[in-house]
Image (tube, rainbow, N blue to C red; front, side, top):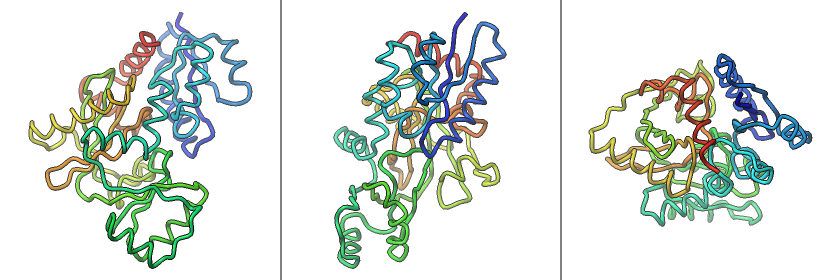
Length: 306
């Protein structure tokens, strides 16, 4: 019998999403009698529980900091336990938006212009606004360097920039990025193969936290995506290229803006959500892969990788 330890919850701002993901996955896996399943939180008893249960595979369903940044992966590596999704280095590179953008740029992958901002340094408002206007241009986006699920992401103009900026002060450092209008397209990769793409049309300003997880937001999901064969091939190949560049494992999802016939890569997620509203299961379903089969493919990927 395969023993699956589902790791969920955690300490990031995405805790509730992680727990929802775990509930969805647990409900599906428990239908199969060949699995013995437990759900575990990464608390002070985590290593003790890990050694007691002795899982065949840890199904890592944590999101955000400490869960998909290489931290929990380091613990699992030290315990020599196989786990789903990307490893230590890949996870830490992908979640750090500054480092990952540098990798994108070096690899000639289009990504919005940006700069890293530190709250340690005082900036005269008028002078700083002019600097942003010249280097990036308004409107722009401000966001944490190492959060997921569009937590604390704001689209800013000149008037509301400082009002929104102060909301992120506790992060210490953030990313300031050129806002790219256009279509929101996301591509899923599974085990170094293109799983598919989906387009999102949120009724909100962009595909933010509420648009992702609140059913009342009524974000429109479009699949298949209305692209030419050449365009579809281009965006999916970029996602596959990045998956390989970052040496990701299992599932990854890359988020793009499509504007003036050009794809801009915003970021790559190494542990995309698996709730009822999540995109990867929806893409898989469209390609005749059930939620159950998707989870099992992710588990198999973990089993055959170190």
